[in-house]
Length: 441
Image 1 (cartoon, rainbow, N blue to C red):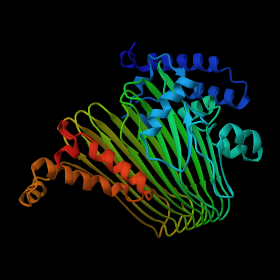
Image 2: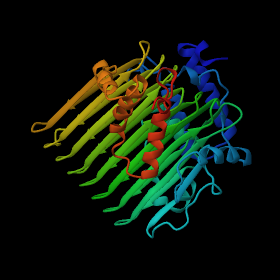
Image 3: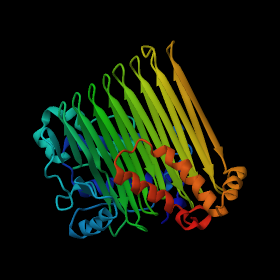
Image 4: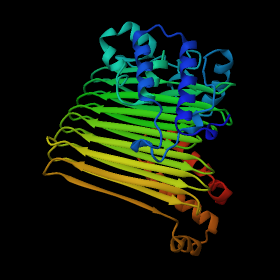
């Protein structure tokens, strides 16, 4: 049965029943996981009647008998092929269906003071970090609660005070013959004055019905520096939900880039809390969608301390019947004096049938702040195309160049050359009106 054949309560009930059956098969004996699943049951699957989900319908999740993915030999063989398509990294941790795959990982030679291991090992060996390792399990996010219920393993990164690591790749692969789901969970702790460059990727095989429900929690300690790139290359039949929680302490800096280039339905929830004075946060996003793809980006930047600075730029290119959502909130607490925040969302529509719903917004509860936001939705300008054609370019090449320039601005915070080159190649391979950009040159 297709998920689109169910509506309303029947859809939510069908998904809840599938999750209950999968949780029973998982035979989780941990009280925390059982409590998280009960929390999911109480909250229920979000739907269009929920304000935060009114433009995103999770119907594709219903009507499937989702199987919790395994990390057996067959799954690891399929994952190895997908990993090879990504840029090479000297240090990488690979999760196959949410479970650490040592044979695909490369963790030798890490700098002193840097720990990269499985979440299961961290739970056993670092009980003092229990609160950090299970953050958000009891919140009001039903899918985060579901992640906490099913995430028996995941990735754990700890960078000690004054230490430096990167680029470090955290690769999550969802793969399986049946409708397969995975709930990868990642926890990153950066000590005072440390630096890290992380590349987090979610990938899946083309044509496979997969559901990836990922949660990543990162704490950036006082004076620490973080560069984070989230690369989403899910399969064309995949549902992907990724939640990223950033907490910035005093005088810390974080730059996070989200690149969505794949997936039938993708929902990103990113929350950055500037918890300490002088914190600085930069969020960039690029989403490319064609056919009937749907991409939803919900972001929240919470200025909870004074002298904070944030910059946010999300850009989208849509073709065919694709749809996208940008819902960006900037919150300024009463104590957050001297806040400096800028937010922008720009979209290009390459067809008459593509649709974007953009909602940038500020909630300011303090004086003496500087806050600016805006949104734009449009098409390529004919005068720009004409100008480039007068310089000898074909019409297709002119369009390709303008689209590439538009997209590349959102990738400015990606520092690793191999990652930047990989993203640029994916942008060039995007198909506006049926032709690959690289074929236009």
